Length: 205
Image 1 (cartoon, rainbow, N blue to C red):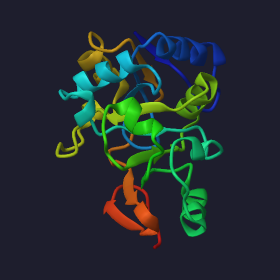
Image 2: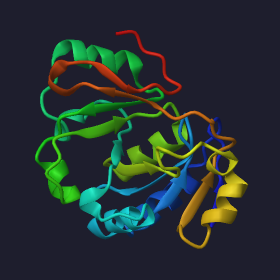
Image 3: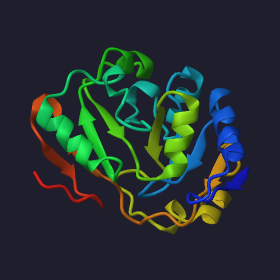
């Protein structure tokens, strides 16, 4: 199913439709401030396994980030971060960044893993942040492309995405043309700031 949502004139009935699919364990494709991504309710284990299967891996091997609507509940998902790191997040988000932080025990439990890091995103896109806000908790997310793939049109054009994924995904949101660049990944583990992948987001260290 494909629905169109205007980021500058959001219809909350359509947002509720997306949220209901997430609550029922569905996977959706949505716009961000970079490329289109897919995601599911962070607290639905069946949906997490489905999302991992779409990437061709077991859940414990998946590299998912989580999308928050803002930074207000960050302490529920990541361990204490120092003041310089928080200031960096606060001035960079919402924006095209994935910040790698140390998770609380909740995240490894949900992802069936013992990994000591998790990616945090707050995209500068009102559609997905509104969905997360109404859902009431973050969503687990992964890009449509694999990191080694060149980002081609079918990762950014909603109708091409629909043709490619309609039979695999419960809902695809057309939020307009996506970007051809991915987010910038910044590691903040143990207070050490390091750029892992330079994407669209520019950051001064």
